[in-house]
Amino acid sequence: QVTLKESGPGILQPSQTLSLTCTFSGFSLSTYGMGVGWIRQPSGKGLEWLANIWWDDDKYYNPSLKNRLTISKDTSNNQAFLKITNVDTADTATYYCARMAGYGGYWGQGVMVTVSS
Amino acid sequence: DTVLTQSPALAVSLGQRVTISCRASKSVSTYMHWYQQKSGQQPKLLIYSASNLESGVPSRFSGSGSGTDFTLTIDPVEADDIANYYCQQSNELPLTFGSGTKLEIK
Image (cartoon, rainbow over all chains, first blue to last red; front, side, top):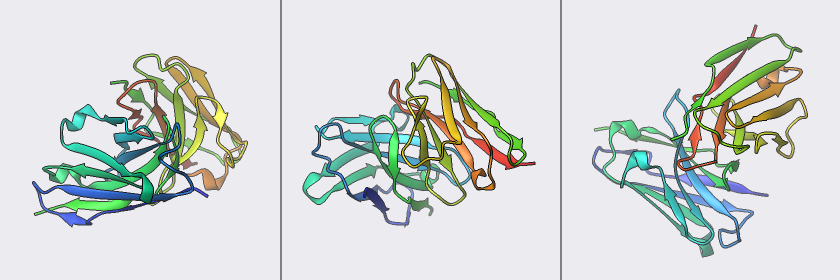
């Protein structure tokens, strides 16, 4: 059974760094072809793909967030991470991680993140 | 970026057939996928690679299309299908989603 669960700070202030963790089970990020992606969704709005990391440590980012994103993984502990630097109120959203190989077959329940001063 | 265009909302009667469209700004071959998102829940994969039904998804759902024009069909529509539906392309990076179609009951 594949499960994913996101965790994060809940609330942070503008200019801080957002650190998110995705803890998963039922698959391994060391298996050929596996990938984990991060997607976010502001309240009442659509979905925005942020980044993907693959079994071979290839990483891909959404250029719209320029150089603010860093994705990484801890294969031995079945976790993936996303950092977003210099957050702004526009980064307020629910953040999802998903097992993604082009498309997201399994999603976590999401974690709400609010950026507010 | 590949822009995906969806109609904002559709109203349908229970038991009827509905088609939800997604148009891509450039060809994505068959690298198009569909999700259902109910209120307060995470998205759920329905269709992958344009026409493949994800395991466990009712056969009332089907997908078709290639290139730039895609459709998700629900036949017949049930009350449990009230949700937002999103298309997503994986033909090129960045991965992009449509803005979603809200399915409403008449």
